[in-house]
Image 1: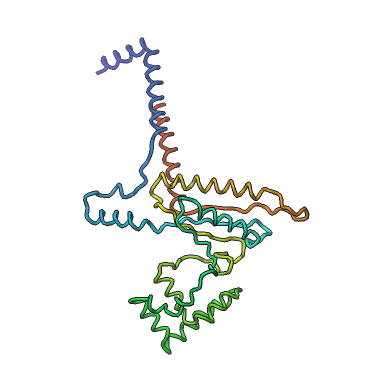
Image 2: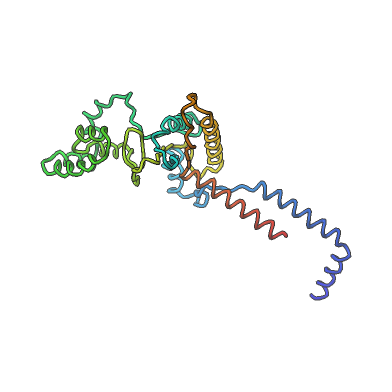
Length: 285
């Protein structure tokens, strides 16, 4: 074995230029392969393909998509309220609605152009099973007292719309209807106002969007990320235009951030690809 190793070393030493050229060629080929490296971010690829339950789950995802949302968080600079940027946020929402990657946008603002009085009068016909039983319990002498006591806390919010809502729906049947229709959003510590999902301090606002494809579709997530960046550049360029009135001072820019499964997918793919390239180059070196 020692003689074989010595022979290989002696051969490589005599032909060191050829060995060095072969190493460089292998390194260039590896770099080109690493550049074309792609990852399948679909976690379903790790599951068995011949399992009946997994196939049913795939069919469900293909027909109904996913519940993952895209969250766009707007934050006003210090000394300014988020209400000063309502026009800019409305423009953001319109551009999101026109984006081909977005299926629906929820800006949190009530659409007053639609008359929902008929639905409010017939909402019990929409409720079923346990939700209907809960609604009927709220209409009893015992349940109406508890419902009104719970709704009384909403009157502490500084909103005339909220006060009108409590007067029209003291039993909270609208909340049950929203849950039955799948419109309840849990986990938000935000107040309800005519301006949308606004934080309690008035410096932040949330706009939610439903992308057309799930977040584990890496190609779609990259396209959505590029679309958001394009909208951000367009909005920043429009905000940089000086106002028509000379006496009006330009406001500082609005801070816009994105969150959700699609953003996580893009960032995770970038980190994995960068680490893989660095490890490959380091190992070859």
